Image 1 (cartoon, rainbow, N blue to C red):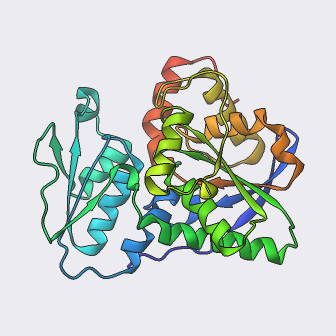
Image 2: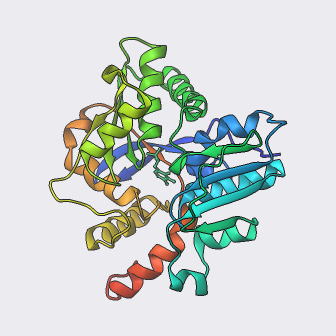
Length: 298
Ligand SMILES: *Cc1c(COP(=O)(O)O)cnc(C)c1O
C-alpha cells in the first residue's frame, strides 16, 4: 500500500532576493503528483469493496490521469480514461504521464459516447479530481500548515498556489476558515486554465459561500494553458538555478510570475505550495528546448 511522506516538509528558499517558505508536496509520493495525492487521499485511505473500476476523463497528458492509473493499480481496479483525441505524435512517441498510464494498463477511450455509464461498481472521477471527496485530503494539508504555523510562532501567513480546477485552493481556504474563524491564513491563487471568471465559477460549483473562496490574482496578459511562453521557461530555469528545486512547467511558472508581480503579498510571511507534477515536464521541456534553443540553463 502507498506509503505517503506526511506531513510533507516545509523549507525556506530565496528567489529574486525574497525569502519564501516552500511546502514540498512534490515529495509526498514518487508515483503521485503531490497535488493529486492530496485530492485522492480519501480514495487511497478508504476501502471500497464494491468498486472494481475507475472511470475518468480529460487530456491525454494530465497529471490526474496518471495518478488515477496508480490508484487503480494499487487497489487492483481497472481504469478507463476518456479523451477527445490523442495526438499522433504522442501515440507514436509515448512519454510522460501518457506513457506511464499505459504501463499501468489504462484503457483509453477516444471520442466515445458511453462516458457516463452508471454502475455500482464504477468509481467516477471528475476531470482533474474536481469533486467533494478532495476536501478530505486538502483539510489534512491545511492542518499540517496550521501545526507548522503554531510551532514557528507565525502570527499571520499568506499562502500561494497556482490553480487548474481550483479545487485545492478552494478547499484549502475553506479548511483554514472553518478551523479558525477569522482565519490568520489567507490563500491566494492564479488561474492557469481559463481566466479569473472561469476559476470563480469552478469555486462556486464546489462551494456556494464566497467567504470560503480564495483570493484570485492574475497578470494583465492572457495566458493559454499548455502553450509555450519564453517568460515561463526563463523563470522556470531561474527557479532551478536559485533554489536548486525543480518545479513543474505547466502551473508553477505562471504561479511564480504572478506572485512576484504582487509584492504586496510579501509584507507577511509567504508559503508557496509545490504541488509536484514533474512527470509532465518531460514532454514540455523537449518542446521548450526545441522552441528556444538559445536559452539554456548554463
Ligand atoms: C493538478 C495540478 C494543479 C492544479 O490543481 P487544482 O486543484 O486543479 O487547481 C497544480 N499543479 C500541479 C502540479 C498539478 O498536478
